[in-house]
Image 1 (cartoon, rainbow, N blue to C red):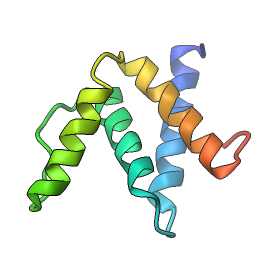
Image 2: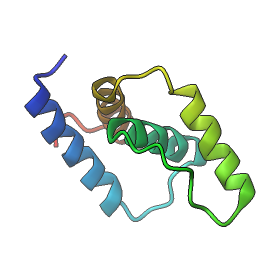
Image 3: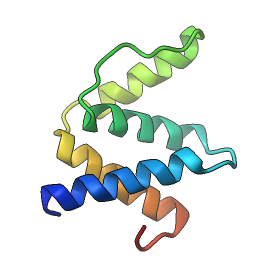
Image 4: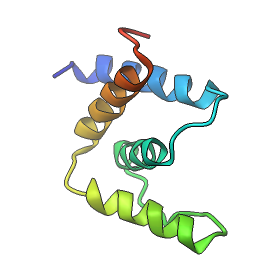
Length: 90
């Protein structure tokens, strides 16, 4: 497990990478990243899509990850981004 400051820095770099990524991403990957991001930031607002089906998928992703602590969610986000994009470090 990383030190908290290192974890936050690495998380911000991973979020920035995804935010700037322009190619389409697989829906299941997006949902996992969404859930980890929301939990990492302790943002438990309802999904804001105008499409009920998308809200349902987002809510389901959050339910599946609900037992994670914010630090665990950050770590899982970082690991997932690195694995999916073959990145060793940001």
